Image 1 (cartoon, one colour):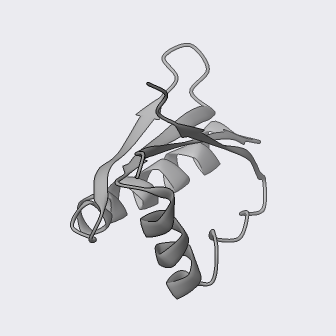
Image 2 (cartoon, rainbow, N blue to C red):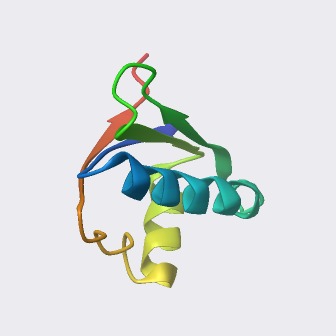
Length: 93
């Protein structure tokens, strides 16, 4: 089973909304990192465009990630004033 990296990029319509969203994600970070199969769950904020941030996740396998998403009912809904893109990457080689 190959590890799976999830990269979620967010853009808020204001810095204040970004501040709120980043804070909420950072608070969840430790509890998610303690979930079975989670190897990384970190929030990074753009240095130049502070209304943009990224969530970087690493999971033991696609199966583990799929099970987590099923148990949670899928990814969280998009927040008003925040757009996001989600990309999934499998380790090659």
